[in-house]
Amino acid sequence: MAPGEPEADATCPTPRQPGPDLSKHPAPDSPTDPADPADPDAPTVRARGLWARGASAAGVRTGRVVHGTGRRIRRATSAEGAGESGLAKLIELHALNSFGDMLITVALASTIFFSVPTGEARGRVALYLLITMAPFAVLAPVIGPLLDRLPNGRRSAMAMSMLARAALAWVMAGVVTGGGLALYPEALGVLVASKAYGVVRSVVVPRLLPAQLSLVKANSRVTLAGLLTTLVAGGVGGLLHLIGPGWPLRGAFVVFVIGTLMAFHLPHQVDSAKGEQRAELHAEPHEVRPKGVLRAVGPSVVMALRGVASLRWLVGFLVMFLAFLIRRDPPGGLPGTVALGLVAAAAGLGNALGSVLGSWLRTRGSEVTVTAVLALATAAAGAAALWYGVVTVTVVAGVAGMAASLGKLALDALIQRDVPEAVRTSAFARSETVLQLSWVAGGAVGIALPLNAVLGLTVAASVMTVMLLWTFRSLLRVGPRRSAARPRVA
Image 1 (cartoon, rainbow, N blue to C red):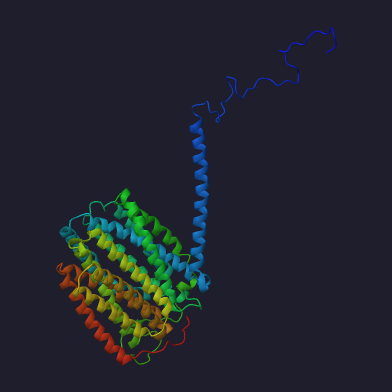
Image 2: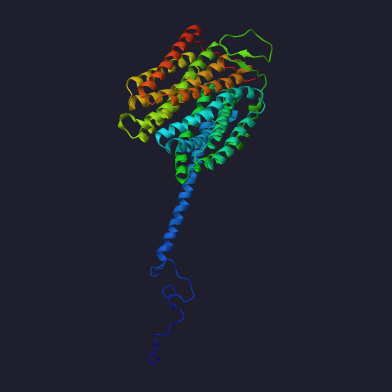
């Protein structure tokens, strides 16, 4: 500054000096910075932002997991040519069917079995058997011949079985709370529709068989998919039941509606009936007859069908008898719910193990396989009768589940091997009906016997011993045979 020049005012800002800090002193009409620590609402706003970002990230991760899981499931079901042949679609449809059936089972079990004392529950289940199983025993033999008359409408038949169960599940949701008599005819309808689906599924599998798979391996893959989804559906049904008794049935309604649509997406060859005829279940072959007349399926198939039917009888007996026996007199001093859970888990694992073993054994020695699993189940039932306890009961449940699953796959292999293509689909329909009736008979005996562990399991072991001796005698007469060349679909 030159001498004599007046001194500048320090309080007057120069043009280059910044103005007041508006961030620290906001104008009355300016919005408040949400990050301002002096603002009392700032932590809440900041927390909401964190929650929103966290929820968004979790949603993205969940979507990726679901997408990846779905892609892996699709890859597994489509392996070894199943995707190209259409078998993968049937596997997915059967998984959905098993999911819906399990939801209905959870709803009925909670109403008929768990919600009342043991004595009253036994009466309710006996009434359930009388009203549902007795008419089913009359209707089931009609299913096979009826499907013989509808060879070109199998996709429609599967869709109708799904749609019927969807409608019945929705109606049952409104009456399941009271558990009145109106529930039982509707349960009968669900049972008939479910078994009709099972018969059609057995008939359809040979039509979708890829060249890389044997029939027994394809059936084991379908069965295993159903078992896995059944386990998941049990948990989902339990959670839905916490909301209300009708909610598992409403969930089943949604599942079966989706299944109805999926049934129509099966390949068109499902409805093909080229060259098919009806089959008759006789041990001795008839003379050659003109095309279109009944034919026999052969002694090996009848022997295996007899053995597998006895295994289904045992499973039905154990389901009904052990359910009430364990609830009233749990083995090993365990709580009834825990003991029932162990037995149910053992049966489920046995079924899964049977499916895995069937895929590994394929068609090697099917007659011997049926006889061997029948002997194993007989021994397990005898051991449970002699030493009733939590270990033996769990073992007999697991062995029975494994034997029934593996025996059914061996029976499928024999039908593939010995039954001509012209009558194979009819043989599947009729054999499936026989197996379902065997389960009904076993359940009826189980509910009729007194709740005495030694008596009931001794009866079961005695019946299985008689059937084992009969099957072994037939095996000696028929003799194990090597698998024939893989028959092709016409």
